Image (cartoon, rainbow over all chains, first blue to last red; front, side, top):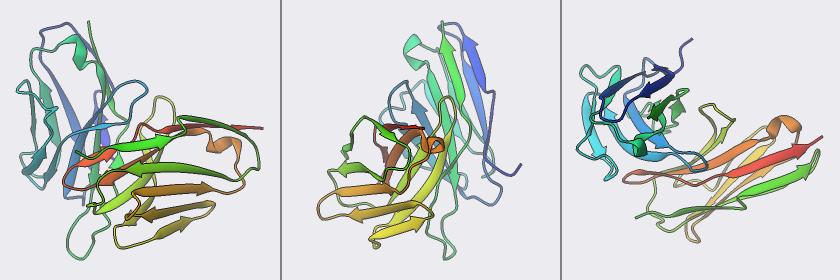
Length: 117
Length: 109
């Protein structure tokens, strides 16, 4: 399977704990995005990378959230000192941009569902 | 800040009907607009992408249009089928990325 993968698919944690999610994009894609989605809402943009550079961060991304893409391949999203309001589906997407290709079609992974007790 | 609205929030139609889903946005400075479908408990599947310089895109029974001057996009689904039942989301790429809240479509056999 050459699609976007995310791990874990589900995470239950207690308030105050730290959690880390991983996203593996489609291999030739240079852009990687993180979104958060709560029930009944559309995804909310958190941040995105082009290769290893983090180009944009939403104001939703508080100091407790950090994302990395150290080698321009997989990415991790860490949430420190989790709060109940962090409970959501965390979605990752990837796209190819540049080199004459400007379609930027985003392909999504299945998401990681976080529940903070 | 870009505001993206999708109306209606929910739609139920009998099988075989043609239907239109609407997406409105407030800032016309966009690079592209993408339509997705989302099935319950699953990730998003890309349907169509329209570049800002384009007016429409077609794929099978789907046709998406873009009118930046009026801040509107429509997704037309021809001859709807029960398998089309899902939530349909529009997403805009500008300086950041903005999704609408979606239209939940049910096609009744």
